[in-house]
Image (tube, one colour):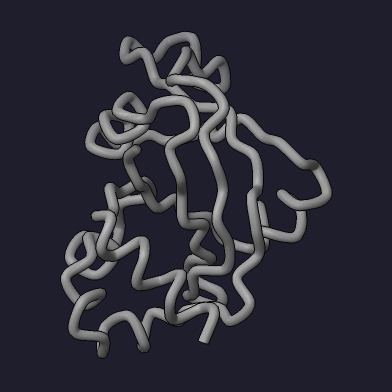
Length: 138
């Protein structure tokens, strides 16, 4: 089992929209490191869903349904084969975990969310993932 964090601005694609749709193709990633993280994902890996720019908080847990495949939203002139994965929501956190809280927490302050703040898809350690769930359910 691997763990990741995916980001979306709520005005672009919110957790509530994800819950309503029940499944989505996580596409539109145009950063090589984020693309490589998508390629690492396997079926049933777990994801933290983070609202970026507005809210700046982890709001839910999702699950990977498929391994990475071609993202057809990329321009045909683009020579890079971008990828995406199908994901489904698992649960809404009882208490969202804010970026400010993450930065102050001894375990979470080392997350790639903090260290590489512009990256839209990051890996998460098992310890970080479990800590988020622990804090969200307090």
